[in-house]
Length: 285
Image (tube, rainbow, N blue to C red; front, side, top):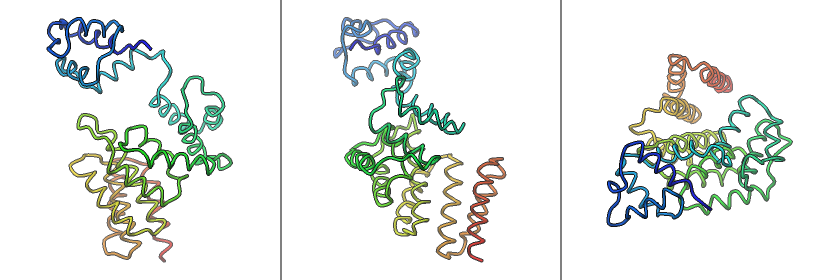
């Protein structure tokens, strides 16, 4: 299949008024780069990154430009996730269901369809993945050596369908093996959110030993980060755990988190956690 990667590279190079000579070296000649730009040959990822370094362009920036240049091609997984998110928040259930029947705009594989069923299940309990489908999903995730955006999102959207013990073990695998880039911290942010979600589920299941592990790992993930949403949700969740275990200070942490949401005018978050706080306190009385 003819690649358009070279076309994007040429657009970047000419846009910076750089000649082929200026980016060629002993490993990649002018003619090799020229053929790549015309789509007549391929080059290795290492060679491409080397060229991008010479052009002062990150790989993330290159991928964004490439995707912008190829919007008419089949939509990718990120497009699918964004589309699902849009439908979910608009509560357009029938369109979500429609993805399972007609996915001509997306190349959906079996894992994608299982994920969609898990998402729909949070709205409509009549639709859910089968036991065999969940087994297929967890088998796939347990065999992943390096967790990329795809696997992280896959797990994140299926947490409420996966059996707890498997969820906890998969969360551990994800935390230990996700791809991190200081240039793009998106993966780390999502991993943090999923670890907090697993902590919440662990508290509900009173799996306190697992909670201790997750708290330790979440603190590492949040160290030197300015993610106020994750920091505040974690503060509340840690306080809830301490309150549940009758440790002094837990209630104060929950109240501090609520105050932060209020000060930041995060009304939806404030309302959601205020309701949870009220239920927690009332159940003790």
